[in-house]
Image (cartoon, rainbow, N blue to C red; front, side):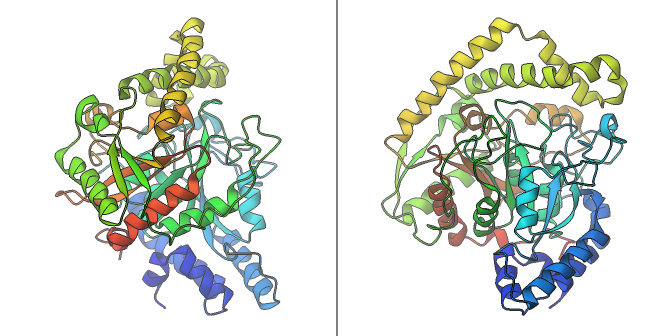
Length: 468
């Protein structure tokens, strides 16, 4: 099997081959390391490659399988971590000069420990916007990640390296974080699958925070089945995370093959037709997703939520207040060690009044209730993600204009699960996308709908030019 074949193989397919001893974990890792060596100079997805450790872990995985010790579907499967996630023995830098020379982590994050226990093979730390908020920036110790579909373009953020590495075929699984859309933005810009599960579904302990009330950690993959498989591995209650939900574990992949016949889908058109008018080709992609679901047997109903700008304003007041509380000391003592974008964005939290924060928290509860009322009569929501495809990475004005033009923030604020996935391609060759959101702890239904969309089209099989 060629290195390209292994680079583009889904984790689910590789898992079956490894379990049957038809694919060596060592061979798999070597093929991906070769692809990283050949292509990462174009994407800058990795800021810390752990090649020797990955080789050693792959050998252990192979020996365990040969001895009949099978840890499960992630055994021998390579993955990467956004560099705000702790891995014992490695620095967690947040892509920032502030933590560039910090001591290595002494413990794994909970999600890291789960992946290691499942037999996963860590390939390295992945680029992020600085502290998951400042980027894409060009004044940091490492370069900004770039979009494999056109390396002159932004890959989305803040889980930028995770999105770029997956879209370039450098690894099959990655973790990102999502506070205002930071898993689903790169998923949308890079044409992959990113899930922000229900608030509290995945532990955040050992992950550098941005906003305690809004942070989520989640899976990023190229396929829906891989995404559900990865969420199966990392979800679960953690008493050490105050925001963790004590919900029973379940198999998120259980309904992937059921289709959508009989499901009710609420389409939120006003987000992208009135609140923020989307690029016509992005609107067409959302319409195509709706037509696909209808043709497969789902019932569609247009629904109305609060205006998109209201979710954004409430989210901003909470996020900036909490982010400033986290960074206040460093901003006072060493402001010059931040990149300009991160410093500028986090400093905004110093000017949010306590009364504004309290009112935002109160309004948040009302917005949660509003979405829950709609989800009482439909099974999922079909929603825009980004309002246009990725812009150029060297155009700061265009980045500032387009970055807030999205519909991901509502589900960070309310905590509802939401998945972003590719929805075809723009005439300029860059990915289009949409979101599927659902009831609290309704991830399995979201995956069911996403799998039906994925199965009706072959978009996820397309490869960026130059990365074959």
